[in-house]
Amino acid sequence: MIARVIKRVRLKIRRLRADDAEIWRALRLEALNAHPEAYSATHDEAAGRSLAAFAARLEAGMVYGAFLHDDLIGSMALDLSDADPQTGEITSVYMRHEYRRLGGSKRLFSALLRAARRQKLTILTLDVAEENTGAIAFYQAMKFKIGAPAGRALIRDGRMIELVTMLRQL
Image (cartoon, rainbow, N blue to C red):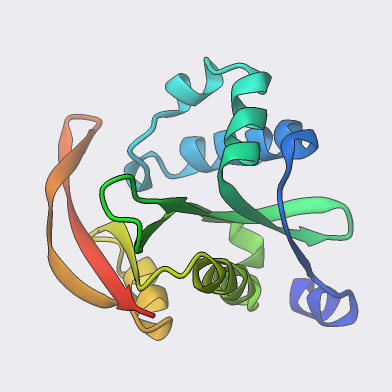
């Protein structure tokens, strides 16, 4: 049913701005709550941030959202590296469960890829839990290669989650 709705209604991808802070905050908290093992930030940390902090993040960064009708159903961010002006990092990736595998994440990534090229980036990186095989398969389909272990891990519910860095040349 959802796949039919997606096909009939055009999914809109656009850069999020400060006035989207409230809806992005809600989506981000949903992501952190649903998948704490997938993010370095925690739900409690993010919930403690002000709406103004979310608005500032949207204005300072390149965060894109996927909208179905007026509902924000997914987001993805591109952060520029302070250490290397030619490198960008993909962060804050989330698509609501019921909208996965319908092409929205690919469209979000395409928008970020265009933004990266406009910024004249030559490398995109991301860190992903090595046990997150679905995400790794998606990133490999987007032409990322598995690099070295990220050199850090997440600890969630007393369990260590190893991260791996993935790279894509532009």
